[in-house]
Length: 163
Image (cartoon, rainbow, N blue to C red; front, top):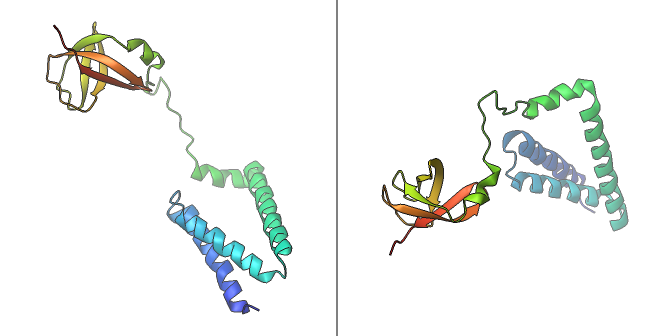
């Protein structure tokens, strides 16, 4: 039989680590994992069998899920959750301009580097200025470049070799 002091210490330590994860260093993960491990260990040490431990742990997770769901729905706690979430939006009126979706249409186009590309800079492609990046090398100002890959909003160029 495990002494009661150790069980209580594990549960308190688990709650402490979870609070640390939520409020002090969110997203780091280590303290959250330690907290969950300490809580589950404390619950299993209280029970008499493995089945009871699984049932208690599952029941606790279900109750916590219901409490979390209801807290999002309740007008009183909704104000609390707003403090934790970002409510502002980036709009065109506010000056936000999203990346162009049609970046794949640039593949294979040639142009001239407007800045030194080491490895990032700007290129002129038929009067259209694009932010580009090289494959890793240096390309000087005014050198011919060709778009060889498009990876999302990242446009990759290499020096255009002329014969």
